[in-house]
Image 1 (cartoon, helix red, strand yellow):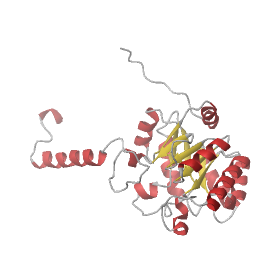
Image 2: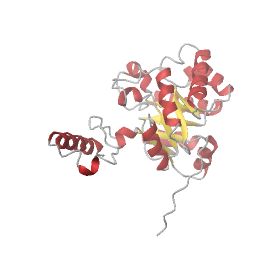
Image 3: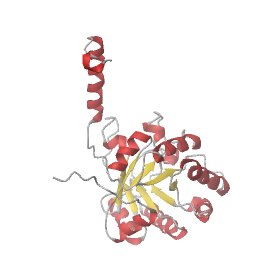
Image 4: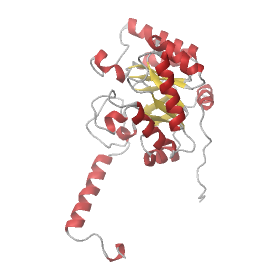
Length: 272
């Protein structure tokens, strides 16, 4: 039996376009720290998203809004040091691009320069056109994000499926076409009807990566903590858990406490 290690080529923005052209699905997961990034990269995941979802799963906030640009750069830098082949994309957090296009460019430059990441992701369509033009004009690769955009949660009022009505669906298609025209290399579609997401994927040349957007898109993204079952509190319809780490980790921690209390740890082989 062969013991050769799997080898993967470095994933680039161009790689993703080629994958779409060859009908190869794109895998994408979040990571927020060095250790998890190493594991995700080693598994062959194509894209690692340093998501502003770190605000929820890493810091315990109810929304993505509190996380700062400095904190995103810290997480991104940690991820970059653990990755040798995946494409690393970093969310531009709320409050770091809304004021004007110059602020948006400054934030994107800081992320790229200080973290070493390969691209940024930004939420919105027509309303952020000027910011997208500036960032893309500076040579920074941009991934778009449409549908449910968590930074606008208080405007939406809920995390329900978006673009179910005709007018909103038409705007989403229009925004997606605009993002492609401006030069975005891919778009995340979050919590939109599967038929609509498939329609967008078929109309655009760039990859469409879905989360709660069905199987007709060009790839899928999940929050790594969710798909590993590190918490059982978040259970949306689109989430598939591949492990139940919440139960396994709790069991290991309880066993450690028990072993310490009973003086079973450390034993003779675990001391000097």
